[in-house]
Length: 332
Image 1 (cartoon, helix red, strand yellow):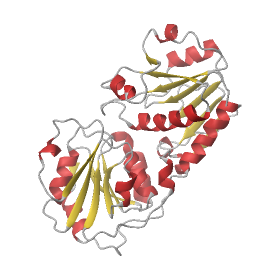
Image 2 (cartoon, one colour):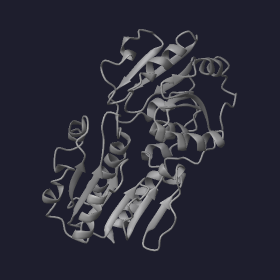
Image 3 (tube, helix red, strand yellow):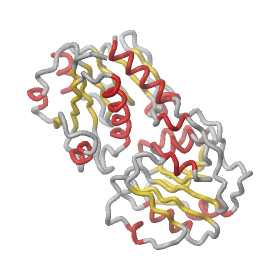
Image 4 (cartoon, one colour):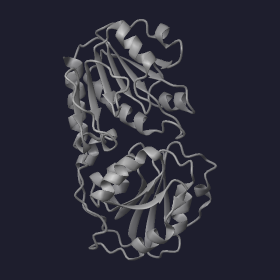
């Protein structure tokens, strides 16, 4: 479509200390969709200068990067009221950005997983993951789409698969994009003495080379590195051990028995929700991994055993819901 305007992605990303990689993963998929749909749009990325932020963005595009600092208004002075802002950060819309939006009279503001403080009038809100923490009350000037069905996943996760037919029990282990607490190493140590298993060890893009997991030498382990999409490895797995981020949702979307450890405080809300629905098993929190529990579950696992509820509210169809909302939002 020949829509000519500026679209600003306000996002944050780093190696896991503040923002992590989940926001970038989501924005990247939205960016590629919009770039193909609206080739005339000028895309701008506005971000805080955190650890590895620029290098991570460079892997997506090297154009139009602006650091969100005291000088951001001068850098974005070319914006006008017909332009679009999509905000997807763990910090949300802050006062400086709110004042800028008001000053420029920008009315097309889309917030993804934001508690919306301070409030922005006349915005659209997609509340997927944050929904598990707090449901946003309807406001007369805002359009709100919220609930598990708006947890944004890659469209491939709309295709549910059968369980693995491999001879040995195949376990996918993932910490998401980062692993600051060396939980991958701790989990593999729990599994090393269990016989007749195969481990698909997913190494996230921001897992440091100094991580102890790289010292592991075991024929049972297949290291999976530098993969933008791990869908096919989920398909090869019988069950999954993941952190409580995007990989947890991906595992649930594919109806894999899912064992979860809480790596960060903000993950507890979704984890508690799925514990109540008996969709997952909790196997650790922060630096502590529940070794005995992991060993017991996996040692006793049989394909016909139901260790979790495989009918969760999560599925890959959320991709189509979200991009339809964004598509209509830009066209209006």
